[in-house]
Each structure stands twice: as structure tokens, then as C-alpha cells.
Image (cartoon, rainbow, N blue to C red; front, side, top):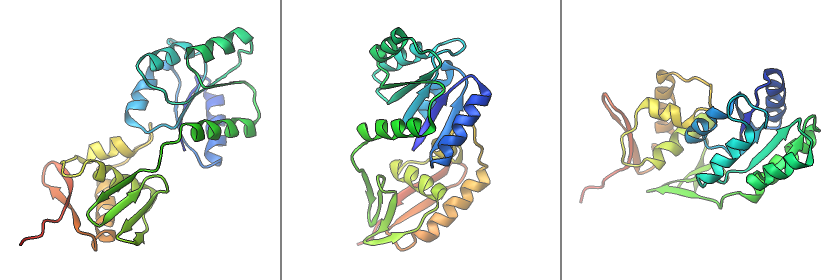
Length: 224
């Protein structure tokens, strides 16, 4: 589960982030409302945990703008404000849930999981030739035989399959798969692609290197 935490208190943000990571979640952290949409454009976020009292654009305005643009990603407001009018206002703007700080760790985790369950997408299967990815269970197959992929290898292969027959650069791959604020070298992308090639060698697809541009995944053409 990939969480975006929007919290301007650095100590509190670090504490919440560590708690969520301990429960197996990936957490991106920003300290202001202005950066929220930028993160959402580059990362597949499952839930936004949003403080109200942010510098510049406050949490209420973040919710209002996202909903006005048709973005209905689950949002949990996490704030020190406990007045009933604040809760009602946040929910009326389109937030999905509301917790007052400080809150119990177990309750925060349980509410986030509940929000994801409510809006959980149906299983999606990506398939090109004999290679298929079940993006719901995170399993990869060549025909009926499963193949083992690391988290990063999975992310790279999934992105390449989403961009089938298109040339994508190493930097595009990095931008697509990396959590906000983390770094990955271009050489590391080469290593992941090399490992993936070995693991899918039995399939009827290839990852071609387009010199000077990047990579392209495509189905092998069988000559008559």
C-alpha cells in the first residue's frame, strides 16, 4: 500500500512514516499542500493522509481542488483540530475519513486499510504473448509457470508492459517506479533490465535496447 503523507511537522511526519512502514506500507512525505498534485502525477498512491494546518495551501483547499478536478483518491484528514465544524467541513469538501491527533496507531492503520478496501480496483491482468502480470496479486507468469521478481524488477517490467511497443528512457522508468524523494541511478536501471531479460527469456517477448534512447518491450515476430 502506497501512502502519501502531507504533514509540515517534521518530527511527527517521521514518526507516522516509520509506523506505517513498520506495517508494510510505502510512504511518501511532503510538508505542504502545493506539492500534493505533483506527487500524485508520478506515483500510484492508494491513500492520502492529509494534515489541515499546512503552510500556504491548507488541507481543506487540497481536498477541494482534488475533488474539483475529478480526483477521488481516498483522503484521510489527520489533524489536531477537534471542532465538529472542522470535521463536517472536511467531509463535506470530499474527504473520506477524519482522525484527531494524537490517535492510536492501530486505529490509523485500520482506517487506512478500510479506505483502500472500499476503493480497491478489480484485479487487472497485463498480458503480452506468453508473459502475463497479475497486478492485483503481484505475480508474473510465462504461460502457466510463475517467475520470481524482486520488487524493483516487478515495477520495471510492469511499466515496460504498460508502454508496450513504445521506447521509454531510463529516466522515464525511474520517474515511474520510484517513491517520491528516493534516488536510483541509470546504471541500476540497466541492471534491473538485464535481470528481467534473463527471467523472461523463455517468453515470446523481448526488451530491446534502442541505443541513445532507452528500451522497448515488444512481442517477438515469428517469420512465416
